Image (cartoon, rainbow, N blue to C red; front, side, top):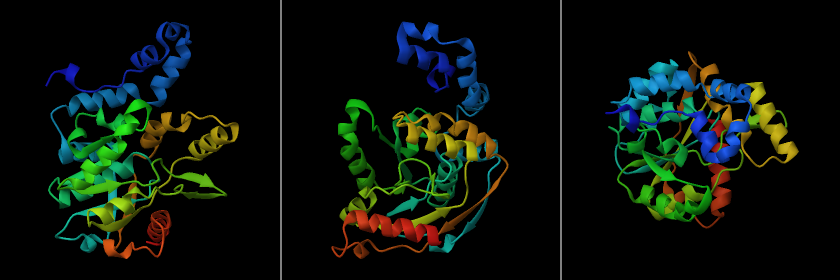
Length: 272
């Protein structure tokens, strides 16, 4: 595979694409800083080294690169038949997604699909495991079609229903409200829901920055720029993953709304 066909991080190109001719006016020290916090050089060296790996093999390479160690509880709760929706809290924004895909991908022989934003779709190695979701711009109209395609596929689905990684609220690090899509679609396609809890946290700097942006009313998710840096801070760590018992799709009846059921499962995850 040629180097041109693999996705590499290119801050200069991103700035040119976003700012056009004004990109030249951005101070070089700022550009250098951006390259530093997204770990452009280190990640590109890694991506070139795994250009031939895709799917679960790619995830395994990521596990080694980040030196992720796992303590997994509840493997016996993984069903051997039927398709499921795996839903997890999202404390980190990097290692959690990689580790869950790795655990479930290994167990189910690669028959897994992530529902993720289209940014990750650029990663050649991850693409076979993704149903692309673009929540920005005109493509947001395709969102229901993509979700539909995922749930109608013959793969298990992995979702982080919060959409973004956990934030600190009133001193507690927890996911924001979970979107109800996984409830309505799991019922529609008769998939049991498996709750998963991932133990981990980002740095105080990350939470403080996210809260400052919220306080200042900044719409752009600046904290997201620091996720690669957080990922590197979380290298060489051991994470505890707890897989809960399957929740039959019939549980989600009309006694509560889909949003209330989503909140119910979210609370269940935090009790694992």
